[in-house]
Image 1: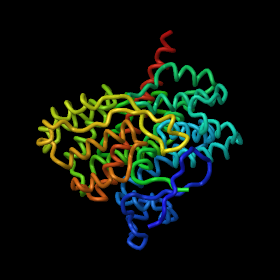
Image 2: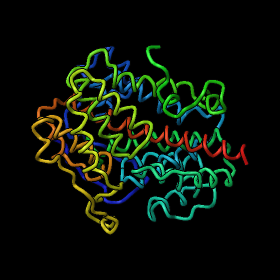
Image 3: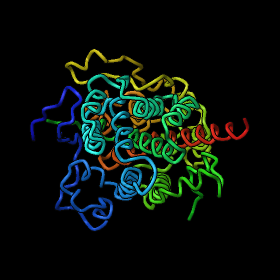
Length: 191
Length: 204
């Protein structure tokens, strides 16, 4: 058993993740599992070796994720998709997801200090009109019952987003309501 | 294709509409959100998580989000399930008992503790335990935690599911189902909101 050293603050540092239930052992993975992992290298990750217990669901989920975040031929810049992911994770309380996507947001935006303020101060941090609109929309979508409404659309439009970019915000923020719940409930982060 | 695109259907996106074209720019995301739905609700092998249990959990989870076309869809799905018709009324009653506002919960002890927010710790009512049975009782209680206060999740919750008869693989599929629905209900809500805002703009 490895010792877990859980982080107690939101951070952009690289964290590990430890499963609370048994992932499949690497030696037991078959071609069906590798299809579910999509990237063979993911066999090294405890998280993906746990989710690959249902390979069909994992494969579909992974491909949904990749297109929402990596398909940047048009639409919202990658940095702001990552901002939506980080803001959702900050609000739901997923320290692990927030660390990964805050790092990506910093890398693609070159605004590391602003991203850190989102982590330190929370989702009310003032990050400028455009980022505030993205964060606020993500938070409204994450609330249950969902609080996303016409005011969020108007605010995103005022900040310069067109409808295709708004759909990227909706997809990115919604997807992290999926990811956060898996990461938070099947295991825990470790420094 | 065995089914129409479920997100398009629930969001009311017509072929040839502006949002149809926008969704078409992320073809892999669209296709695989649909495949996720099919893998969860029409699996080739339901394995350790029966179709009736999937329908019951889905009706409960989407119902907890409030009245919506998504909740109506999964409510009807439960009513149409061969082995689950008797669960329709109990699930409706449990949705009413479980409704609250999230996300709340505790952060790891430390500087974030000042932001801890207490909220409902839902437990199935004693009167409906016999009809639901131990597996669904544990599933609904855990689903409620995932919907409203996922940051409260702890390793003990996994032990509770295992003790109630869930296998490790069953827990993975069950967690994916609740988490997927958390995504689907938001995408549909977001797209409907955007469509309504655009329609209003055209009208005014």
